[in-house]
Length: 443
Image (cartoon, rainbow, N blue to C red; front, side, top):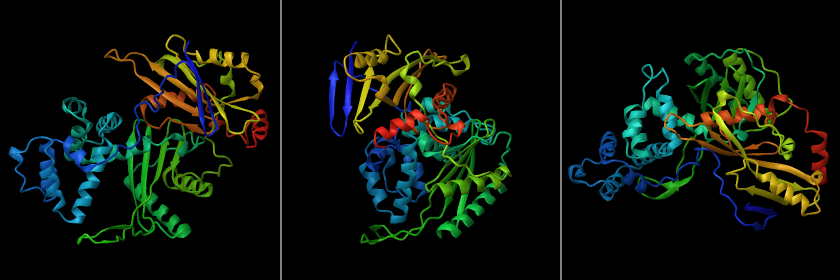
């Protein structure tokens, strides 16, 4: 059995025969890099011509004789436009580029099925016919702008790590007001709040979307004025005044009574915004939370026989423990990473743990499990494809999963069922053993 042991303390050393690779995220990637020339080479001339004509650009381009991926004429035409138009073009191309990969396509297809869009539109055939992800995203952008806008917002929210959200699970039975008027009221309250507390947010637009059983409100309050250096219409380097926005995103799952909030700010701000949302959308007065509830406990996973049960409705065929990250008491922040080939044995990594304990002076009582990488293998779909999802959970509140992605939602549910996600317990503090262990590490 090949395996590796990795010590991490700023420098690294590797022992063992082979270290398997890990794919984290299950389809959600970081934001795609945008470069205009690359985008133009990937986008079909037909759609570029249609889009640029609406911007008053490209009339001089010999489109009928222009080969695909021959981007020089197109780029020259864009560069002759005003700075305002160029900025708008690049902004649109960036947004299209954001959705030009698998998870973006899935977000577009899922949003199209929502009944608000003419009773629901099946965009899957359009995706199947499109030769590239850019082609599909660009076509939806042009032909179904409402679907594109909602999908882009939701994809951005769903691609954000769960640990950046703040959750409360005490709202079972609370019904949400989903009218446009309710969204307008929420925007006004957010504007009042930020103007009074921080002197910004005079204007605040709110969009409301639904995805599966989750409701989203995307608020865009006006931020402080900025003047970053840039080139003006005369191509002179000078400050470019602007009034950007910042995001406040609420996600509410009514069947579970769970509210998630994504915002930059301190604990007081997060709790104020939760209560504000409760008053305007749920019509309830929410008590303040004394603790931030997102928390994972991994101690029980030191036992190879810890039950990782799945049910038929989960669609999961196999659960693998691929990787363990351990910290040793008395050695500062140095870590031991164990990673095994789990092809034949889903818990082969525990054999490595046994070897480590048997061949060293370490005892299990001085090891703290600080990270676990799981892999879920799902039952074959109608095409016979077995989908896989690898993700990492770290103590006390780190997780690579995202909200909204169907496979990630299954994994999040399993973490709660297994007792690894202890967020709902709202404990006053970590377990006694964990506290004493952390003190021994100087944490």
